[in-house]
Length: 386
Image 1 (cartoon, rainbow, N blue to C red):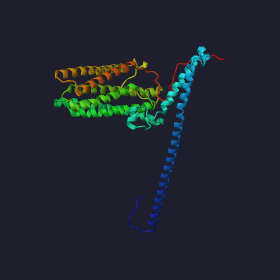
Image 2 (cartoon, helix red, strand yellow):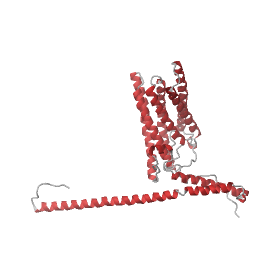
Image 3 (tube, rainbow, N blue to C red):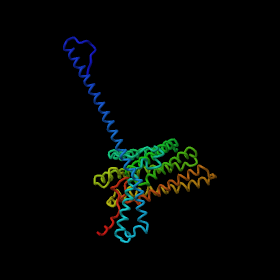
Image 4 (tube, rainbow, N blue to C red):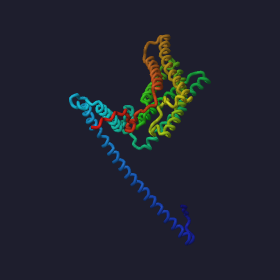
């Protein structure tokens, strides 16, 4: 609408102004009605969702009563004096054991769906606030956000060690300022990764538990490294140099693995072999049987072993070098030495754990938290007809 401040000069202009004013008021009234209807619909939907969530909690609250009944059945079955007739028939006994086992797994799934937080880590960060997501669309967004976070932060992961190397190349010294900002960013990165993965696992992801522990250990190691930088930089300069090279190789590996995992994950989604709420298994590639002949898989697996063995070897070297350096300079055992040893032990643990998980992880059916469809047990023989 365009409004003029000069007075109309004719009857036609007066009529046109009146019509414009009337249209403006009608549009204003219509907009007010639509906004009001939107609020009414929103509040009604919100009330409906609240009622549905209340019903959902009431359904899941049956868990305790059902678990008690299952425990009583277990006790009755295990008691040799109660139901001897069932145990005398081997086929019937196997069928009962199978059914009890399935019930126990289903009860575990119900209990997992009752979880609001699911871990001490999340409870310390957000309290008792529920982190459960029931909308499948939001679960997909949560998973996509996780993959995007991993992909884009990989470049920052590489940026700091490369910057440190360039600084040392042109200025001939190791920059403790760059290292300090690097470790500060890594603490945020590992805390964020741990939190995201715990939320994903709570909402049905089959992510390996080791990688959550891996990020927690890494966050502790980086925090210790930052404290050591502020107090014993000159004493342990070799520790920070090794750390810089290690983050460079680790970041390069993560970049390749993230790209490989994303491609394989979307292929599995397209083939119906993975659910939309699944995520790739973090820093580890999967020993999938139909991929073992793939040259990309073999090269990536060899590179992964190389980095993990390098991580383990750096841990051993760091422990030996800290001991030799302090002994040569006449230092007695103190808090700084303890922190340096702790960093080496963290690298040992990370390298060994990563190698073991890469070696042992197979592409097998892993139960998804809170999912009934992923519960599988060997089929029991059918009882004979009576």
